[in-house]
Image 1 (cartoon, rainbow, N blue to C red):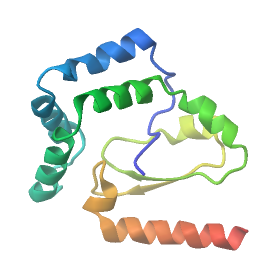
Image 2: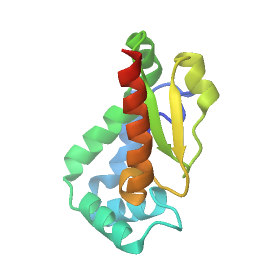
Image 3: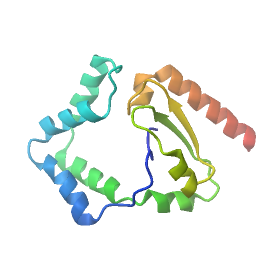
Image 4: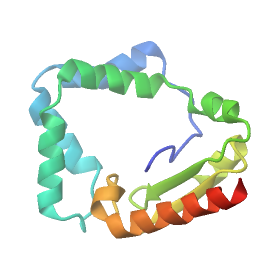
Length: 146
């Protein structure tokens, strides 16, 4: 869900990934809440939902968040996608930030991308009816193909 939007760049080096996430070592709650509010939502996201998610993210553990961030930045998604070899891959993404479908298809030609309009990163919370409908269509489609 709302992932693999840009697979054109490779993983970061260990030093670069560490530097990128080291800024959260001090005053993690304030910095994480600001990041969440700035990056993950659209101007159409309900303020109460923004508040809830931003507070939840800010309440997380700084060490865990840094390690997760470094791990994601160093992850070679292209290599991982190539290993799927025939596994159905369906991405249900938000329209907040574009998805580079051409780059995805260059790595995994059978990928299916569904974009939910008027949604931010937490598409399943922002547009639950649209998300659930898209998910059901894909589950039905996959069931029929077996």
